[in-house]
Image (cartoon, rainbow, N blue to C red; front, top):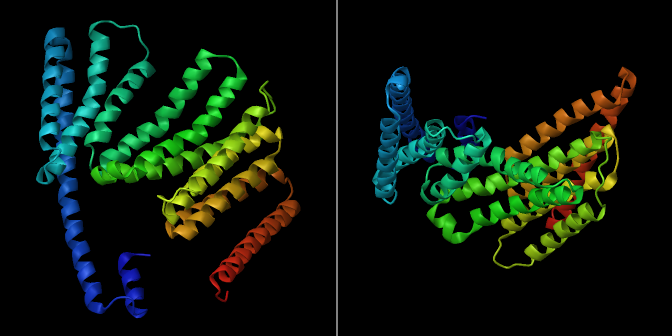
Length: 376
C-alpha cells in the first residue's frame, strides 16, 4: 500500500488528524525532491569518473609504471586526508561518504596495480581477501551512510563465509574439523556480527553501520540455516562424528538460555537472539538426521521460516513476515513438484499442507489471545 493510502486509513481510524496527514505528505514531497537532486548529482559524478577512467585506459600503455604507481598513491592519500578531515563534520557527511567510497574502491585497484607492475604471481581471490580485510576497519570506523554500509554488507556476506570455509578446506582433509568450522561459522559469526551492531558505544557513533550489522546477522543466520537443507539431498555421507553437530546443537540451546538471562537486553533483543540461536540449531539438524529426503528438506525450510515469521510478528516487523510467507509459499510449490508426480497426489498434498499452515496460524492466534487475556 502506498504512503498516501496508509495515511488515509490512519485518518479514517482516528490515529492522526487531516492536518498531520498533510504535514507528512509535504515532508515526503520535500524529501523526494532532495533525493532526486542527490541521485542526479551521484549519476553525474559516476559519469565523470567513468569518462576519466576510459581516457586513462585508452592511454594506459603510454604511461610509465612509476607514474601509475605514484599517481595512484597520491590519489589514495588525498582521499584518506579528505575522509579524515570530513568524517566528523555533519555538513560534509555526503562528501565524506563519497570520498570513503572512492577510497574503498581505489584500494582494490591499487592492489591490482601493484600486482601488475611487479608481476606478482598471486591469485585474484588473494587480492580480494587482502583488500577486504584491510578496508573493513576503515568502513566500520568512518562509514556513516546507509549506501556504503549496505555495499560493505554485500561484500561481507559473499566473501567472509567463503574465505573461512575455503581456507579450512584447503588446510585440512579432516571432516570433523571441516564440519566444526562450518557449523561454528553458521552459529557464531551471526551472533558476533549482531553483538557488534548491538554494542552501545559503536551503535551511537555509527548508527547506520550498526543497524546494517544487526540486519546482516539475521540474514546470514537464516541463509546458513536455509542452505543447510541441501544436506537432505546429499547421499554422499562423509566420515564425521555425530558428536560434532550434536555439540553445536547443544551449544545453540545453551547460548539461547544463557543470553536470555542477561538483563541488558530488551525484549526485542532477546527475540532476535532466539532467532539467531534457532538458526544455529537448524543448521545442525540435517547433519544429525542422516536422511536423504525431499520431504524433510521442505519441512525443515518451512518450519525454519515459519518460526522466523512468528518471531518477527512479535517484534512488529510486518514486512519481514510477508517475505517469510512468500518464501514458504514458493518452497511449498517447489517441494510438491519434487515429491509428488501425479496431479491427484499433488492436489492432496497442497490441500494437506495448506490446512496444516492455517491450523498453525489459528492455534497461534488462540495462544496469543489466551496469554494476553483477550478474545481471539
